[in-house]
Amino acid sequence: MSAVLALLAAVATPAPYAYVQLRDPAQEAQARALMAELRCLVCQGQSIADSDADMAGDMRSLVRERIAAGEEPAAVREWLIGRYGDYVTYDPPLSAATAPLWIAPILLLGLGAWIARASLKRRRG
Amino acid sequence: MRRWLIWAPLAAFALLFAVVAAGLFRPAERVVRSGLVGKPVPEFALDPLIPGKPGLSSATLRGGEPRLVNMFASWCVPCIAEAPQLIALKRQGVRIDGVAVRDSTAALRGFLRRNGDPFDRIGDDKARAVQLALGSAGIPESFVVDGRGVIRHQHIGYIRPDDVPKLLAEIEKAR
Image (cartoon, rainbow over the protein chains, first blue to last red):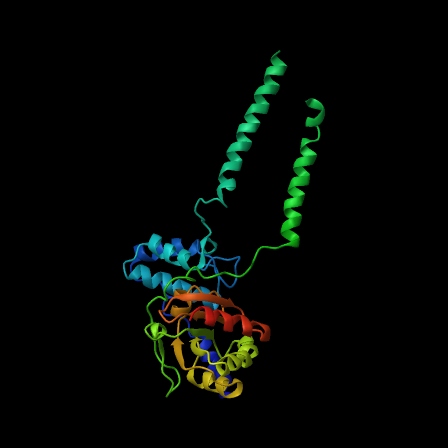
């Protein structure tokens, strides 16, 4: 029984800033914006801002502590991407793998314009 | 020209179908690999958690000999399953250090008593600071670190009996 309690105590104590906001509202806003676009690594479909997982709490605490220490949100984001890859962010940078996502709509729009032009011309003629 | 254009939508559908089917039958890797493999271990110093057993710092990982850094916890069930393999690695002369993630002295002591203790050192990673700094997305996970403190290999998930020769080879490679 005491072992179970000790276990619960160890697991249940959240990291200092998992559920505590930063004192400075501007810093807290920065931290929130970043937390909303970081992926919870153990839940994988949620951001760390939305997840109640233990590890998401630890990641929130890490983000808040680093921002409170004066680090730029972009630097914290880079630090995490260096460790977990683009997978950790919901706002992945443009790369060979993500390029089709950006290029496809432009191509499709162009194709649509071309088809529309051809059919309009036919109708007029 | 018009004749074969009529097949274009079907061809596009077949292509899309093939892409989706390929994804279904060969799903993408779901594990998150650390970006630090091949790079030096970040600086850290963890307090001891068990009296008499030293804590773990990045300086010890530059001790000239390759080491296996095992991320584990007493609350982690697969960690129990990999414990015999860690003991086997220790018998083969592998130096093993532990990072106890979110654990307590009492619970960890019980874990080591039940499952054996292959660790030279155990660091107390209270809020996963070191786990996050190493790019580890879950436990158990193990890192092979060479004598200069460079991470050479990451083993994700628990160490199965057939992983032991692979890890021994990675340790040899790091020598």
